[in-house]
Image (cartoon, rainbow, N blue to C red):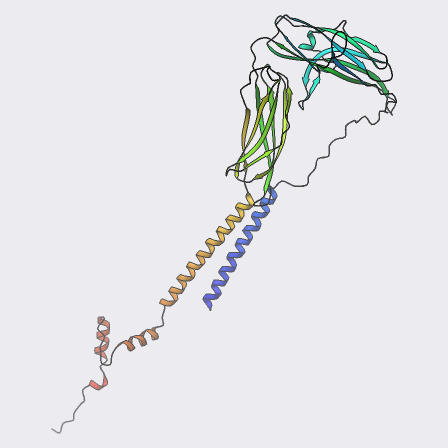
Length: 404
């Protein structure tokens, strides 16, 4: 009974210790886990709601044109040697029911931070193709009656030291108007449209893209067998001299062979010397200790304009996805199994020890049962001396009286 109580007390202390360890481990892991449900409230920017809507909307545009009428080319595609001269025309079209004045200019094309195609702002000076475009006069302003077109000639003068490859610009028409805000301030509103010009200067072409700065931010889950999400950011740069687009793929591969991919939009036309930063969310990532994110760009180009560039261009980065909760559960199960085996072994030793401990009276009774009547044990000298000193009463000598 005493042994049973001791075993119960040991078991109780063991399980209480395991429970305490699990509670501390769970509290620690929860403190490390990222807080869910957090949101960042964006700052409110000026949205233009204070600007009253114009009663008379001016609709206008630009279009490729011959010397006599607009055509359907859509964009200008030119080829030239250094020092060449190219003549062409652009149509300025006023689709509205009121007269409007437009500023016509040639400017460089640029990529926006999001990768879109745009003209250099009106207050910035051009340094490439925009500086090579000559109009009938600088700061050309034209006033068009309602629903009329105006064909404007322009000249592209390629410098003798122009570098080989693609040079991109825009012929733009800008409408400058003034509006009064609710606070009484007069605001200048600039509305710009344009037609793209792609000029390729002869020489050695080097179509090339690079993928750099790949960073992964992983958000795990407390579910032991659940999946997490990763935010993959990287930068695509046009390090060659040919304008290129691209097909993008972003995926995450696990240590055990799993793969999670994300849908990524096409890379728009990226001009030489420009870069765009991409941000992609990848979901369904299993926690396999070590994962690797891959960003790949397969270049796209105008058919027949250049030999297929080498590629695809890609970058990779590994990151940790350690399933802490699952590891804690596995450690706890192993600890329980080890404790169970140790207790079982200890109980077996205790039972063997109890079986080997017999009372002295019980041992002597067992020995007497094994000895036959009249036998003298001769196992050791102590037994022989004890038997000689204590003779059986039946064999003891009797004294005889004599009548001498």
